[in-house]
Structures are given as structure tokens and as C-alpha cells.
Length: 269
Image (cartoon, rainbow, N blue to C red; front, side):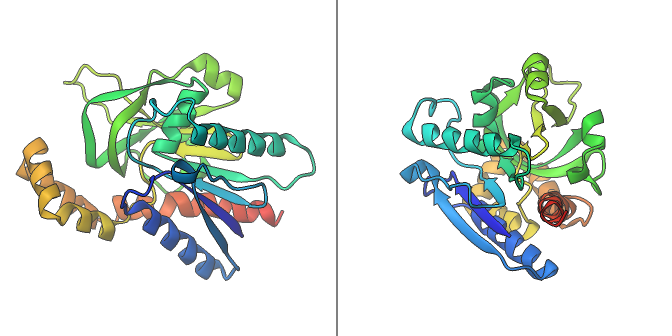
């Protein structure tokens, strides 16, 4: 399996790249398949892959998913994405599978006008439940997850008010939405979309593992920030949820592995 990781972290230290690498290596080892893995610095060097890969994973990243509109790196990025879509429309071609994570998900939703991309009233950070839509309940990539299932969220921005017209024109479906908060009169964010038969994306981090998140949260400066923003009880609850096998551990072990499994099975059909 040839995999290209489009790195949108712009050189900012993160756990996402480590988690993605480890997931890919573990998948290749489990299935006893050779793995070619290449990484591309999209925002730093406007570097994007060619069409020589089976799977593309486009990462999360820092900063605004709105302010970069029209930049050189976005021009390169959307030229790459369009080339993949054009390739997949051809008959008798082996299809290329794309997974978009968080920042990538947001810029693609903005670019195709699939919803409103705006800043959140307050940052979402921690472990949260996410609800499946009717389409999400039938989505094979989500097979094995509960409703709600639990995710690692870390974002100042959000995609809300999905455009049914634009989604339908693209053949896309919303798969998951933010938890319902009856006491908060705010729009629920769109948390996952199936864009087409070979491209799916989430506004959360399915690659996040409990070990890395625990380490991240345990740093004194982050502990202070979470306690200040959400309270000590919420902080302890986050740490507890990380250890439960049916929460973050299940999402980590299910979502991206299912995506890779689908891509692998497609190669062998």
C-alpha cells in the first residue's frame, strides 16, 4: 500500500503525525503488507503528492481555516484534490482513497461551500460524545462504533449550517454531528462527511490515541488551561474517559483502520 500523508501542521509540534505514522505501521504489520509512506509539507513548502499513491491522509493543523483562502499552498492543495477527484471519475482506474482530518476537513468544506466555517464561541478541547446521523449509521467506516461514540476534539473553528443543496450536488452526506446541548442555544457542528465514495472526513481527530492525549493533557500548562476553562472535575473526567476501552480507545482502533481496510479490500477486488 502506497500512502501519502499531507502534513498541514506547518512545523508546529503535534501528536497527530506520530499517531498517523503508528496507525499506518501497525496496520501494515497486522495485514502483513509492504507499506510505502511519504509525507508532504503542504503549508510550509506548498508540497503535495502526485497520483502515484493508493491512499491519502490529510492532517489537522493550527490556525484559521479561513484566512488561508487564495494562498499558494491552498492553490497547490486544491489542484491536488481536484486531480484525485478527476482520476476517480475515470472508468477502469484503481480508485484513490482520501481521508481528511480537522483542519483539512474545514478548508475543504469552505472551498466547496458545504457549510459555514466560523470561529467557535469558545475552543473545543477534550473528549466529547458525537452522534451519528441516519447516513452515519449505515457508513461502513463507522462500523463497530456506538451512538454516541467518543472523540478527541481540539479546535477553535467549526463547520456549521451544512448546505443540503451543495451536499446533494456533490453526492455528499453528513455522517456525524456534535453532541446535543439543550441548554446552549448554539448550532451543532458537522463532525463528519462522506464527500464521495472514495473520500471521507472528520472535524475531530480519529488518529488520537489515549497515551498521547494523556501525555498532552498532563503537561502542567495544559492542565492549568483545562481546569481554568472547564473546571477540575471536567479535567479528571477527560483523563478517566481516555482509559475506558469503549471510548477513545475504540474510536482510535476503529475509524482509520476501517478506512485503510476498505482501501486495501478495494485494491484486491
